[in-house]
Length: 304
Image (cartoon, rainbow, N blue to C red; front, side):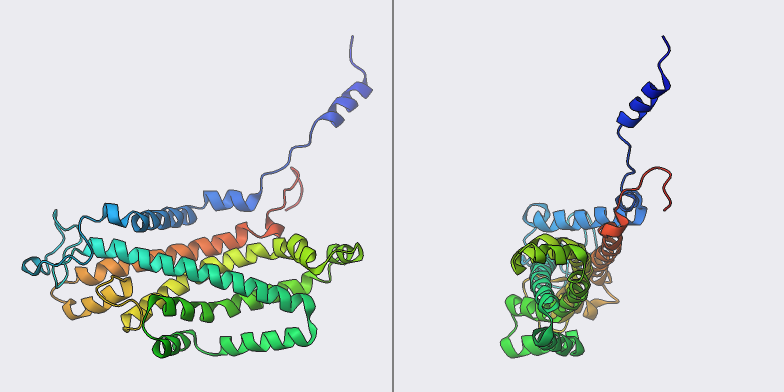
């Protein structure tokens, strides 16, 4: 017996309508430069974490008889002027750079996000006062402020991190504040307030979920700047102190042997450049992939 037209309509209506995959994340995963940057950064992170295992020598082990040897089987990236293995120092230097970057980025993202949310949510005089502090720190050159802080409080890794955090969080605070000012006037925020939601609940349930993608994307981009600033401070002698390795310090030490042993400069410079470029590429891609407006699923055939 042939099914009726009504039966066909009922079957079609009962079928779930397929939805399109989020296009932004699909493009993120299929983008060759982004995946190459992710693989390169992952390799550097693994090298840093496993430095005590993968490094064939201690980073401060000296052998003056084997100083300034070129790359070979015993020393993959050669030795420096004290006979120390360059690869071992590069691997341990990656731990310093990535640790400083991770701690500083986490601190600046937390401080900047909270500062921006409070300023944007309450507005008025509090907003004006808080943003004047942000404007003051942004107007001051980041490198000069970092040099000033490390020069006053001393040359230590803690002071370097403190200096980097102070130079980085105002940018996130301004970004988050501008977004919160727009969101606080939206209907869902007004509805939550009318329903009796406290300011803390509005922040947790409605504001932070809508700004977290901006914070993550901006923090990824800031990580490259922070790592570069740490290398700069170590290069000028205000960051990591010898014999502890740092990419910036290794570049400084290699300048005296630029003609006789160029591999001393090439090794830390390549790893530093690769890390900074990878973070920049990932940051730009995350800015698109984490944007909720670009992650909305669309029905097949719907206009883009």
